[in-house]
Amino acid sequence: MGRNLQSSMQLRPIDLARGHGLSTQAIRNYEEAGILPAADRTPHGYRTYTRLHVRALSAFLALVPGHSHQTATSIMRAVNRGAVDEAFRLIDESHAQLLDDRRTLQAVESALRDLVPTEASGPDTVSGPDLVSEPTAVSGAGGMFIGPLAGRLGVRPATLRKWERAGLVHPRRDPLTGYRVYDEADVRDARLAHQLRRGGYLLEQIAPLIAQVRGAGGPAPLEAALCDWRGRLSIRGRAMLAGAAELEAYLRERG
Image (cartoon, rainbow, N blue to C red; front, top):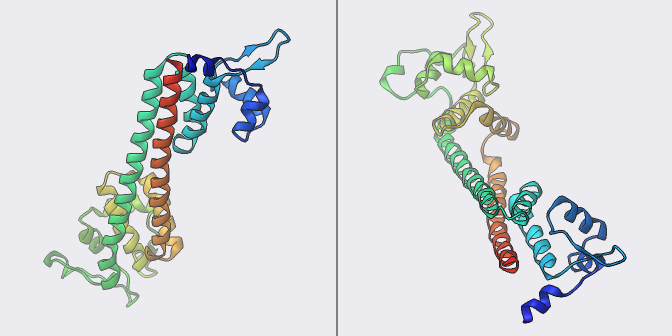
Protein backbone atom coordinates (compact mmCIF):
# COMPACT_ATOMS: atom_id res chain seq x y z
CA MET A 1 0.00 0.00 0.00
CA GLY A 2 2.91 2.35 0.75
CA ARG A 3 4.10 2.07 -2.82
CA ASN A 4 0.63 2.88 -4.14
CA LEU A 5 0.48 5.96 -1.94
CA GLN A 6 3.87 7.08 -3.16
CA SER A 7 2.91 6.48 -6.79
CA SER A 8 -0.38 8.34 -6.41
CA MET A 9 1.06 11.46 -4.79
CA GLN A 10 0.61 14.54 -6.89
CA LEU A 11 3.32 17.08 -7.63
CA ARG A 12 3.10 20.36 -9.44
CA PRO A 13 5.62 21.14 -12.20
CA ILE A 14 7.35 23.56 -9.83
CA ASP A 15 7.70 20.80 -7.21
CA LEU A 16 9.35 18.43 -9.68
CA ALA A 17 11.54 21.19 -11.07
CA ARG A 18 12.80 22.46 -7.73
CA GLY A 19 13.62 18.96 -6.55
CA HIS A 20 16.16 18.68 -9.37
CA GLY A 21 17.32 22.26 -9.74
CA LEU A 22 15.45 22.78 -13.01
CA SER A 23 12.95 25.23 -14.42
CA THR A 24 9.32 24.36 -14.98
CA GLN A 25 9.89 24.94 -18.68
CA ALA A 26 12.56 22.25 -18.66
CA ILE A 27 10.07 19.84 -17.10
CA ARG A 28 7.52 20.60 -19.81
CA ASN A 29 10.20 20.19 -22.47
CA TYR A 30 11.25 16.81 -21.07
CA GLU A 31 7.67 15.61 -21.09
CA GLU A 32 7.12 16.77 -24.66
CA ALA A 33 10.36 15.05 -25.71
CA GLY A 34 9.18 11.73 -24.27
CA ILE A 35 11.80 11.70 -21.53
CA LEU A 36 9.04 11.78 -18.92
CA PRO A 37 5.77 9.87 -19.11
CA ALA A 38 2.76 11.99 -20.01
CA ALA A 39 1.44 13.88 -17.01
CA ASP A 40 -2.13 13.72 -15.79
CA ARG A 41 -4.18 16.91 -15.93
CA THR A 42 -6.41 18.50 -13.32
CA PRO A 43 -9.95 19.56 -14.29
CA HIS A 44 -8.46 23.00 -14.92
CA GLY A 45 -5.79 21.61 -17.27
CA TYR A 46 -2.79 21.84 -14.96
CA ARG A 47 -0.14 19.11 -15.14
CA THR A 48 0.31 16.83 -12.15
CA TYR A 49 3.26 14.52 -11.63
CA THR A 50 3.81 11.48 -9.43
CA ARG A 51 6.59 9.44 -7.89
CA LEU A 52 7.00 7.75 -11.28
CA HIS A 53 7.95 11.08 -12.86
CA VAL A 54 10.44 11.75 -10.08
CA ARG A 55 12.11 8.41 -10.85
CA ALA A 56 12.05 9.08 -14.59
CA LEU A 57 13.65 12.48 -14.21
CA SER A 58 16.29 11.15 -11.83
CA ALA A 59 17.10 8.36 -14.27
CA PHE A 60 17.45 10.72 -17.21
CA LEU A 61 19.67 13.20 -15.38
CA ALA A 62 21.87 10.32 -14.16
CA LEU A 63 22.17 8.83 -17.66
CA VAL A 64 23.29 12.05 -19.35
CA PRO A 65 26.89 12.25 -18.00
CA GLY A 66 27.75 8.73 -19.11
CA HIS A 67 25.76 8.43 -22.32
CA SER A 68 25.29 12.01 -23.61
CA HIS A 69 22.06 14.01 -23.67
CA GLN A 70 21.00 12.59 -27.03
CA THR A 71 21.51 8.94 -26.09
CA ALA A 72 19.94 9.40 -22.65
CA THR A 73 16.90 10.92 -24.36
CA SER A 74 16.66 7.95 -26.71
CA ILE A 75 16.97 5.51 -23.80
CA MET A 76 14.17 7.16 -21.85
CA ARG A 77 11.92 7.40 -24.90
CA ALA A 78 12.40 3.69 -25.53
CA VAL A 79 11.59 2.80 -21.92
CA ASN A 80 8.52 5.02 -21.84
CA ARG A 81 7.05 3.44 -24.93
CA GLY A 82 7.72 -0.05 -23.59
CA ALA A 83 10.69 -0.87 -25.84
CA VAL A 84 13.02 -1.86 -22.99
CA ASP A 85 15.19 -4.07 -25.21
CA GLU A 86 15.82 -1.07 -27.45
CA ALA A 87 16.90 0.91 -24.40
CA PHE A 88 19.29 -1.88 -23.39
CA ARG A 89 20.75 -1.93 -26.91
CA LEU A 90 21.48 1.79 -26.70
CA ILE A 91 23.17 1.29 -23.35
CA ASP A 92 25.24 -1.57 -24.77
CA GLU A 93 26.37 0.68 -27.63
CA SER A 94 27.55 3.31 -25.17
CA HIS A 95 29.52 0.74 -23.23
CA ALA A 96 31.04 -0.57 -26.47
CA GLN A 97 32.07 2.96 -27.39
CA LEU A 98 33.68 3.44 -23.98
CA LEU A 99 35.62 0.20 -24.42
CA ASP A 100 36.74 1.33 -27.88
CA ASP A 101 37.88 4.65 -26.42
CA ARG A 102 39.89 2.83 -23.76
CA ARG A 103 41.54 0.68 -26.40
CA THR A 104 42.35 3.77 -28.45
CA LEU A 105 43.97 5.38 -25.41
CA GLN A 106 46.00 2.24 -24.77
CA ALA A 107 47.14 2.16 -28.40
CA VAL A 108 48.17 5.83 -28.26
CA GLU A 109 50.08 5.31 -25.01
CA SER A 110 51.82 2.26 -26.45
CA ALA A 111 52.72 4.09 -29.64
CA LEU A 112 54.11 7.06 -27.73
CA ARG A 113 56.20 4.77 -25.51
CA ASP A 114 57.64 3.17 -28.64
CA LEU A 115 58.79 6.59 -29.81
CA VAL A 116 61.23 7.05 -26.95
CA PRO A 117 64.08 4.87 -28.31
CA THR A 118 63.64 6.37 -31.76
CA GLU A 119 63.90 9.95 -30.55
CA ALA A 120 66.80 9.14 -28.26
CA SER A 121 68.84 7.63 -31.07
CA GLY A 122 67.95 10.34 -33.58
CA PRO A 123 66.76 9.91 -37.16
CA ASP A 124 70.17 8.95 -38.55
CA THR A 125 70.61 5.83 -36.44
CA VAL A 126 69.66 2.83 -38.56
CA SER A 127 69.33 -0.72 -37.30
CA GLY A 128 69.36 -3.89 -39.34
CA PRO A 129 71.92 -5.13 -41.90
CA ASP A 130 69.62 -4.41 -44.84
CA LEU A 131 69.85 -0.66 -44.24
CA VAL A 132 73.57 -0.17 -43.62
CA SER A 133 74.48 0.50 -47.25
CA GLU A 134 71.63 2.94 -47.87
CA PRO A 135 72.13 6.71 -47.53
CA THR A 136 70.52 8.16 -44.43
CA ALA A 137 71.55 11.82 -44.47
CA VAL A 138 71.38 14.60 -47.02
CA SER A 139 73.92 17.43 -47.06
CA GLY A 140 74.59 16.88 -43.36
CA ALA A 141 71.08 18.10 -42.61
CA GLY A 142 70.27 15.15 -40.35
CA GLY A 143 67.36 13.93 -42.48
CA MET A 144 66.43 10.62 -44.07
CA PHE A 145 65.47 9.68 -47.60
CA ILE A 146 62.18 7.88 -48.16
CA GLY A 147 63.84 4.51 -48.84
CA PRO A 148 65.76 4.18 -45.58
CA LEU A 149 62.81 5.42 -43.54
CA ALA A 150 60.46 2.97 -45.24
CA GLY A 151 62.97 0.21 -44.55
CA ARG A 152 63.24 1.14 -40.90
CA LEU A 153 59.47 1.03 -40.48
CA GLY A 154 58.96 -2.05 -42.62
CA VAL A 155 56.60 -0.31 -45.03
CA ARG A 156 56.75 0.59 -48.71
CA PRO A 157 57.80 4.07 -49.87
CA ALA A 158 54.34 4.35 -51.42
CA THR A 159 52.88 4.08 -47.92
CA LEU A 160 54.94 7.05 -46.73
CA ARG A 161 53.78 9.05 -49.74
CA LYS A 162 50.18 8.18 -48.84
CA TRP A 163 50.76 9.33 -45.27
CA GLU A 164 52.17 12.57 -46.63
CA ARG A 165 49.03 13.16 -48.68
CA ALA A 166 46.97 12.52 -45.52
CA GLY A 167 48.99 15.14 -43.64
CA LEU A 168 50.68 12.73 -41.23
CA VAL A 169 54.23 13.64 -42.27
CA HIS A 170 55.63 16.76 -43.93
CA PRO A 171 58.99 15.96 -45.52
CA ARG A 172 60.89 18.74 -47.20
CA ARG A 173 62.42 18.45 -50.66
CA ASP A 174 66.15 18.41 -51.21
CA PRO A 175 66.93 21.46 -53.39
CA LEU A 176 69.45 19.54 -55.51
CA THR A 177 67.73 16.22 -56.08
CA GLY A 178 64.09 16.96 -55.30
CA TYR A 179 64.00 13.88 -53.10
CA ARG A 180 61.90 13.83 -49.97
CA VAL A 181 63.89 14.39 -46.79
CA TYR A 182 62.39 13.41 -43.43
CA ASP A 183 63.70 15.31 -40.42
CA GLU A 184 63.55 14.19 -36.80
CA ALA A 185 59.95 15.28 -36.31
CA ASP A 186 58.88 13.50 -39.50
CA VAL A 187 60.57 10.29 -38.39
CA ARG A 188 58.79 10.55 -35.05
CA ASP A 189 55.42 11.17 -36.70
CA ALA A 190 55.93 8.33 -39.16
CA ARG A 191 56.80 6.00 -36.32
CA LEU A 192 53.67 6.98 -34.41
CA ALA A 193 51.51 6.61 -37.51
CA HIS A 194 52.97 3.17 -38.16
CA GLN A 195 52.19 1.97 -34.64
CA LEU A 196 48.62 3.20 -34.81
CA ARG A 197 48.06 1.74 -38.27
CA ARG A 198 49.21 -1.61 -36.92
CA GLY A 199 46.56 -1.17 -34.25
CA GLY A 200 43.90 -0.90 -36.96
CA TYR A 201 43.30 2.84 -36.87
CA LEU A 202 42.37 4.79 -39.97
CA LEU A 203 44.43 7.65 -41.33
CA GLU A 204 41.67 10.12 -40.55
CA GLN A 205 41.70 8.92 -36.94
CA ILE A 206 45.47 9.22 -36.70
CA ALA A 207 45.80 12.69 -38.24
CA PRO A 208 44.41 14.63 -35.24
CA LEU A 209 46.77 12.85 -32.86
CA ILE A 210 49.78 13.51 -35.08
CA ALA A 211 48.80 17.16 -35.22
CA GLN A 212 48.63 17.27 -31.42
CA VAL A 213 52.06 15.66 -31.03
CA ARG A 214 53.49 18.07 -33.59
CA GLY A 215 51.90 21.06 -31.89
CA ALA A 216 53.26 19.96 -28.52
CA GLY A 217 56.78 19.59 -29.93
CA GLY A 218 56.90 15.88 -29.15
CA PRO A 219 55.12 13.20 -27.15
CA ALA A 220 56.42 14.15 -23.69
CA PRO A 221 54.13 17.18 -23.17
CA LEU A 222 51.14 14.97 -24.00
CA GLU A 223 51.42 13.00 -20.76
CA ALA A 224 49.18 15.47 -18.97
CA ALA A 225 46.63 15.21 -21.78
CA LEU A 226 46.75 11.41 -21.61
CA CYS A 227 46.25 11.50 -17.83
CA ASP A 228 43.28 13.78 -18.34
CA TRP A 229 41.94 11.42 -21.01
CA ARG A 230 42.23 8.45 -18.64
CA GLY A 231 40.51 10.42 -15.91
CA ARG A 232 37.62 11.40 -18.15
CA LEU A 233 37.13 7.78 -19.23
CA SER A 234 37.00 6.70 -15.58
CA ILE A 235 34.50 9.43 -14.75
CA ARG A 236 32.38 8.36 -17.70
CA GLY A 237 32.49 4.73 -16.60
CA ARG A 238 31.36 5.59 -13.08
CA ALA A 239 28.63 7.82 -14.49
CA MET A 240 27.34 4.87 -16.49
CA LEU A 241 27.13 2.84 -13.29
CA ALA A 242 25.21 5.61 -11.55
CA GLY A 243 22.88 5.95 -14.52
CA ALA A 244 22.25 2.21 -14.57
CA ALA A 245 21.25 2.26 -10.88
CA GLU A 246 18.76 5.10 -11.39
CA LEU A 247 17.34 3.51 -14.53
CA GLU A 248 16.84 0.22 -12.69
CA ALA A 249 14.97 2.09 -9.95
CA TYR A 250 12.74 3.67 -12.60
CA LEU A 251 12.08 0.31 -14.25
CA ARG A 252 11.05 -1.14 -10.88
CA GLU A 253 8.75 1.81 -10.30
CA ARG A 254 7.09 1.24 -13.66
CA GLY A 255 6.53 -2.39 -12.73
